[in-house]
Structure formats: C-alpha cells, structure tokens
Image 1 (cartoon, rainbow, N blue to C red):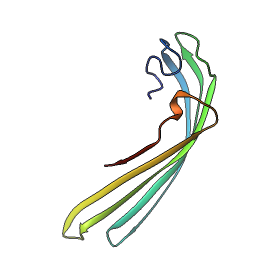
Image 2: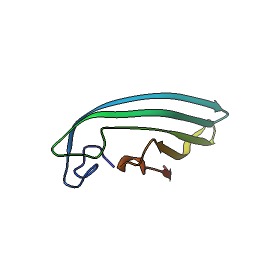
Image 3: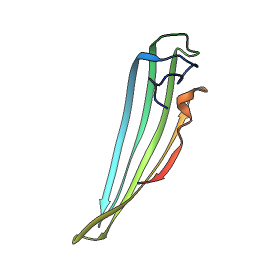
Length: 105
C-alpha cells in the first residue's frame, strides 16, 4: 500500500508529508552464470502530516529481498531467469505491514 494513498492509515485521510528513514545492507555473489543477491532493510516512518487524524504516530518494519538468476547459455546467449521473494516484519499492526510477496519476474 502506498503511504500517501487516501485511506492508507485511516478512512478518508491522506498523508501529505512523512519522515522516511531507511537502512539497508546489500550482498551478492556470481559464479559461472549464476547470480544470487539480496538485501536486508530497516525502515522507520514518523512525523506524519495528514488532513485528518491517523491511529499511529510512527512505524518501524524490517525485511529482506533475494534475487536468483541464471544465464541459460553462458556466455553466448544472455538470458536470465529471475525470481524475487520478500518478507517484511512490523513492530505493531499497521496497514503497510501486509506486504508479503513472492513473484517471478
């Protein structure tokens, strides 16, 4: 869900401004056409400015994303199959926390 979408935190309320802080660590390894990389992140949102009351004053979540790709015919034919999976954990219930994804790309 988009932080700035109307109704993201409360029905009919739109957030117009927020302090967004993020810390992430990235890693990756490649070997014979196989690539595996990922990211772990920590995210803090606070100082919300909205056109009505919202039920939270701050939120914290953290999660990861991994990507695995493989060249089909290395190095002649450059085609990569890619799959992405991510998971997020939140410190309390909040509308932005229901973002589990696992999707091929």
